[in-house]
Image (cartoon, rainbow, N blue to C red; front, side, top):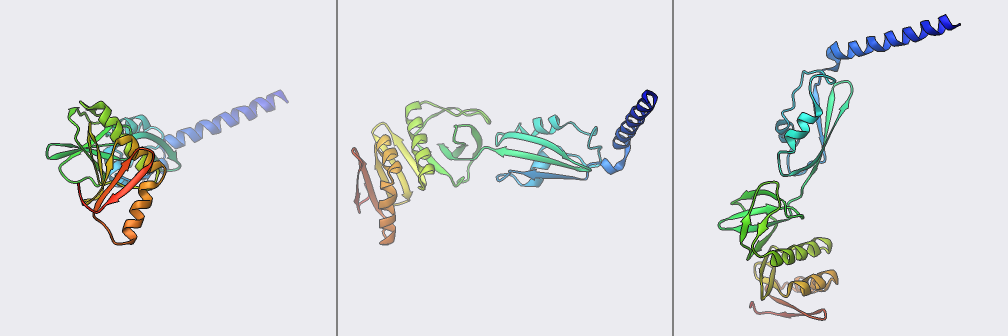
Length: 239
């Protein structure tokens, strides 16, 4: 009985070794395709190219997942990367991208950042996110936090953006100074007040209600004034 068990174990080992050798040598396990999941900013093809992904190599030994991961993480939009194998011949790349949230004006250009202030890119074309004006950039390095001279104003402007995103509102631009803030719903429809009052009014849906009422009347021009104690008023004039 012991000899039989020993023989059976040997056969199993030989089968496993044979399967491994087959997997390492057989073209059946050569990579023929890459699948990309979770991407919105970059296309599948762009991510595959950025990762220097090759086909025709063995799925077990022809590449290192860490090489693809490290290559992709060089791009500031890439926050997390996971690589897995889908046998017999497909590699799956799962990405978590940083989302562009705002852009700080820098001369004639825009510095695009995510919700944590990480610099994603610089562009001379309107990036179609909320534009922040009134800040002096001290340091901007791709993939690193943006540094400005006016740290308090920067924090206040980002708090407005957080409240905006969380409460179904959108501002095209925010002008921020020590005296107060102007948040533009449209080019000629602006919300004015202290940053903390605007944040509170957004959380209470007061600004949203005023904007909805104005739009229902076809009004797209004027000033929405936000003061303390959640008081919101409208003036047809542009201040």
